[in-house]
Image (cartoon, rainbow, N blue to C red; front, side, top):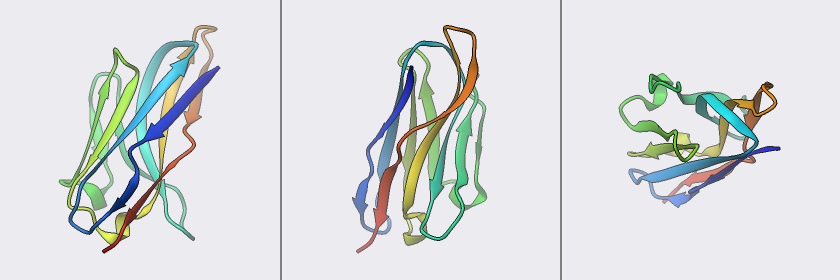
Length: 120
């Protein structure tokens, strides 16, 4: 009943930029925290950035100053602007959201993931 769909991944050269988008849809009453995680081959999934419904943000130390998370509450969207990309940023990026449905059930939802490849 609730879906998260990411877009915006792709191939970029080191030092380049990408913007990821995630759209939440379905039987949504409210969206609480939203965030982006990533998982590189052979590694655990890690938090990249998160944003509360009020706009407070936090970032992994490895992306501070290079990535910016933002959200549009009216559109149920969350974005991740990535700049100065490094090869170590290469991973599958997942959107995550804590959503209360119209049935007043709160659940953690995940998108299907979008690949970010950083290579020359």
